Length: 166
Image (tube, rainbow, N blue to C red):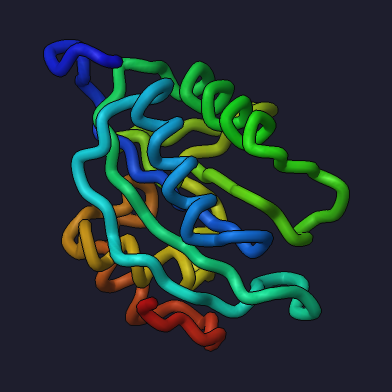
């Protein structure tokens, strides 16, 4: 378990699942994140959401959490990908069904673009299933490259897919 004094970076993560016991998948991911990536500081409600990008699949459960971590962005990404793999995530089809998906939305106010990682998440402004739970726990957080609050991004989001609290 992580030592509280070592936590220095605030990170927002989006969790999603649409296979099997969705509630258990989220709970298992939360446990693994806290064991391997950082302490959970805040968590949104769980939202049932329409699939984005590929409509012919089951509805998703999505949740946003804020963690405090000492891991650098690439190390954090590696841990999250390892958690996904351990839980049975297969990457066979873009936007396809998944047992768990864990995306880094923000890593503090850092802007990172490389071959392996892009933060903030580039699709966040276009996805209500991420913005609605994020707004629940961080409405006034300012996007570090768009200079808008989450509330403003949500208000201007072109996505019209259904997002409802479970």
